[in-house]
Structures are given as C-alpha cells and as structure tokens.
Length: 379
Image 1 (cartoon, rainbow, N blue to C red):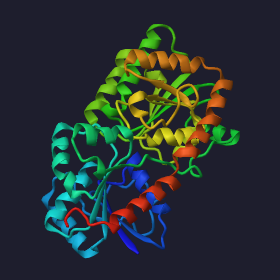
Image 2: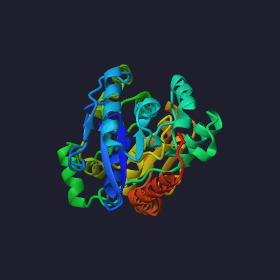
Image 3: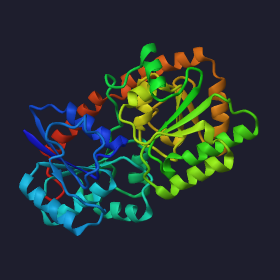
Image 4: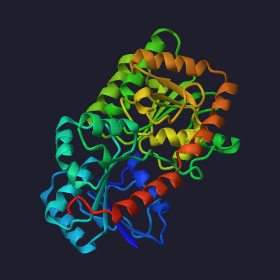
C-alpha cells in the first residue's frame, strides 16, 4: 500500500480542487491510501469529499504563515507518507520547502497554471530539484517549465486534465426546463455562461466590453443573457467588471451568480460557455461543459491540448480582445440551433475519447509507481 499525502491551498471552488477530488475517488483503494491536507479551511466541495477528509487543516490565513509551516512539518512527521503530492502554487512552494528540514518523501508537484508571477518563477527554478516529478497539466505549462524556466525535461511529465463523464452529462428537456426555471432564465433567452472565478486571467472584463461593442453596433440580441458563475478571487478586478457594466450599459444582460454547487444543472441551462481566458491548462470548466453537450468558446492559449476543435465542438479565437470576442459572440448567436446540436454530440464524444478522470487516474497511478521505484531527489 502506498500512502499519498495531498497538500493543496484549499478546497474552494475551482478546477484544480475538483481535479484532486476526482483523482482520489478513482485511485485503486487496494494499492493507495490518500489523505488531504489544506492550507486553509475554505471548502466548497463538501458533498464530493471522501470520508474523513480533509484529514489535516493548517488553518493558514496568509500564504507565508510560519505557524502553518510548523504545523505542516508536524503533520508530515506524523503521517510519514511515501509520496507528497502538492497542488497549486502555494502548496507546491510549502511542500518542497518542508522537505529541506522535515521528512523526505517522494515529491510530486502539480502545476495547473502557466501565468506564474515573476517572483514565483524565480522560486520554481530553484525548487524544481526538490520534486521527483513536476506534472504539467497542459502542453503550455510544459513549455513554460522546460523552455522558459529551464527545468530539465526528464523531470516534467504532461498529464492533461479530465472530468467525470457520468457526473457531467447532457441534460434532458425536463432538466433544462427545470434549470431555466431555477435560475429564472426564461424559455427564449440565449444564455451564455462563464464558469470561472472573477479574476483577470478569466477575462470577464473583456467579455463585458465585447457586449458593449455589440450593443453600440445594435448587434446585441435583446434576449442575450450572460451568467457569471464563480467566486471572486480579486476584489479590485470585480469592481472593474461592475464599473464596466455601468459604463457599457449592458447590466440588464449580465447576472452574477457567485459559486454554484450544481454545475451540471447550470450547464444544462446554457446555450454556450464562454472561456476566452488569457491562459488555461486543459480547462476543466470547458471539459465539463463539452461533456454536458454545451459548445464552448475558447481562447487558443487555453487550447494547447486540443480540448476542442474549432468548428466541431465550439469556437476558438486567437488574439483575445474585446473586438475578437464580440465577433465570436456575434457568430455564435447567429449559428443555427441545428448546427449547435451537432456540436453538442461531437463535443461529448471528443471528451469521452481523451479527457476522462479514469484516464487521469491511470496516468497518475503509473506515475506514483514509477516514482516509488526510483531513487528520489534527496538520494
């Protein structure tokens, strides 16, 4: 039995957090024992948590808490896992620093974002040798780590994200009607959904500006409705988005939903999902939507793993600007419903063929076995 200790910043709503929980549910229980440790107590996925998890809570309110670091060292000395698997930047930093003075398990770090700050890139270069393997969750992240940060290619492995197609599946007509009623969307509205935290990376501001351009040109349908579903991770950016609604005059077309637990139902209520992000790593929300049969608008920077094929499963835009988003939205709303239905069927088939949690779990179990069989970075 291999003990795997998962360290993650929190279990707040987000793709990486859901990815971790999906992975744990798919591990072979006869071969792996998993425990979760969170830096702080934000937990969104309560219904999806394995029994008695997260087992460890470090109760940190800031990323650089010396008290939380001390608690982490104490927990690691008690748990003595064979593998320490860290998720997201804060946990990747803390976990590797802890191995300098604490126990020295095999270390795997999962990198879910390629928009690292310059200061974090500096740290990543210097801590990479503490990882037995660094998992890049997209080809774009692999390029960042190897080509731009100079990390040895043999230390980096690509494991693209996946979703549970049983959990995320198309809604039937009755479910769509019920979801539309729940969210008071009406029958005839064209509903676009952004399932993303409110943050600069996600480009909600550009989408609002795009709607403003369409309204000025008289090209924004009166029945167009944009739903923003996700937690606010940047208050300053949230204020800018709110101000843009007033400036562009499209406030009647936009609703803020905050974090949503039943995402499958919300996808079922949508006609399209918009994800023109600055960058993403095999974007999980896009995979969820596609598995639910909802076409997606995705930026090319977020599509390095061919999450969708332009024209078959949705739309891809290259240079992400308010003007390019406006042009894409104009095309989307004018696309015949028959064409969008064909996209829906093809989208789910595409996800089933390449982007499932079963494939992700198989990839990670092979990685765990490989890392366990080799001398680790401290030997």
